[in-house]
Image (cartoon, rainbow, N blue to C red; front, side, top):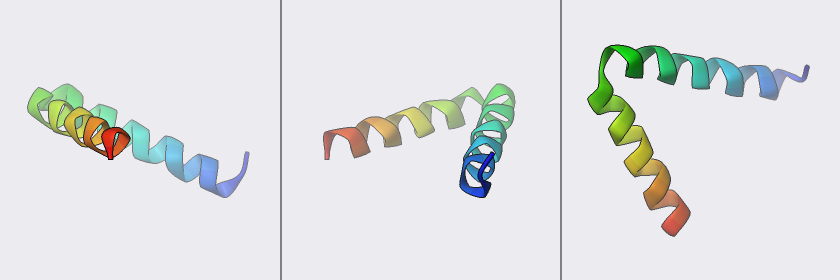
Length: 39
C-alpha cells in the first residue's frame, strides 16, 4: 500500500471515529463534500 493511500485511510478513519461521537461533525463533513462537488 502506498503512503498516500495509508494517509487517506487514516484520515477517513479519524473522521468516522469523531463522527460516531459527534453526528453534527459528520453532517458538516458531508456538507463540505457536497459544496466541493458542486463547485
